[in-house]
Amino acid sequence: MKLIVGLGNPGLQYKQTRHNVGFMVMDELASRLHTAFDKTNFKGIYAVANKNGEKVILLKPLTYMNLSGECVRPLLDYFKLELDDLVVVYDDLDLPAGKIRLRTKGSAGGHNGIKSLIQHLGTQEFKRVRVGIGRPEGRIPISDYVLSPFHKEEQALIQQAIDKSSEACLEWLETSYVEVMNKYNVQ
Image 1 (spheres, one colour):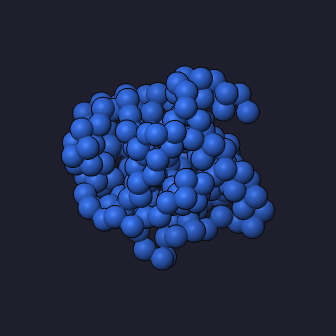
Image 2: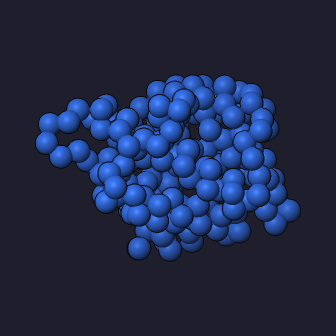
Image 3: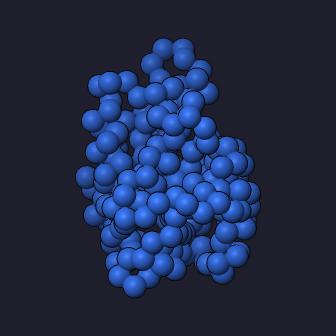
């Protein structure tokens, strides 16, 4: 069994914002896996699918970004999953809009959702797919920037990143994460 978590904020006002790109990837994965987010528990909403005979859980925490670990840890425990069975998809200010970067571990880098996960998981060693949203130009506060929608000229780049992130997650279900990382980190 594998768990893929997309970080974001619940509510329509956040639906198409930069901070919700993790949720956008989960929606794309649900579509590709022909499943729907129809289960609520563990302070989240999730979908269950099968890929090549293996159960795959797609999870969107409903705790708001800063408390994401409160959702992920109980779900991992309930399904008796190891950290090696987990991938987390989230937005990253330090990557240009549309770029993705896969990692097997690392610090939170100022991302509050990742800080919460590190706190609740007790380690920085879990797989991640970082989706670039770029940094704001000028003096726009970071909190305003991440909660704003993508500019029209960024939308095609972000859709490509959502597609690549989804493909990387699906490939991880069939091969090692290191192989997927080596493939997608050179693009």
